[in-house]
Image (cartoon, rainbow, N blue to C red):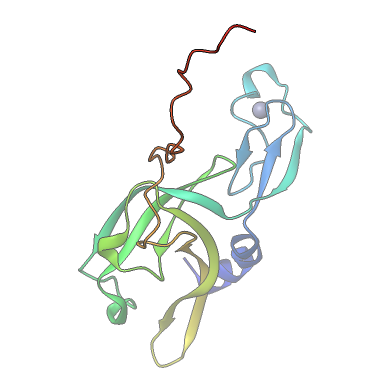
Length: 163
Ligand SMILES: [Zn+2]
């Protein structure tokens, strides 16, 4: 991608500004002018509105990269994940602020605006979104889905005396 094109697209990438079809409520990122879900009915024409993604999502799948792309040499190993946003669109991005072994499918993440890479001595810096966990990777709290503790009350099986 050329630098000019990158910067032209940067505000959109930074803001996670997508579009939403007001006919079927499908959200798109990057934004689309028409809704493929509705196109065959011609129902999405002039039904697309700008939509701001929250940046919240969860890891759908991921890979740990040990063989860095040019410009990423200082960061290996790093994690690249497919993140399913709460609004629906699936984004690809690096997962940061977590050790690669602690990344797992279902990890709750939030998109943050970070430096992506630096190009050579000219110091051209690309920015974009990365994903950081919004939950503690480990800790004393029980894992989600564990049953709530049962109140330690005696069973109320005592027969009542007739009034
Ligand atoms: Zn639609």
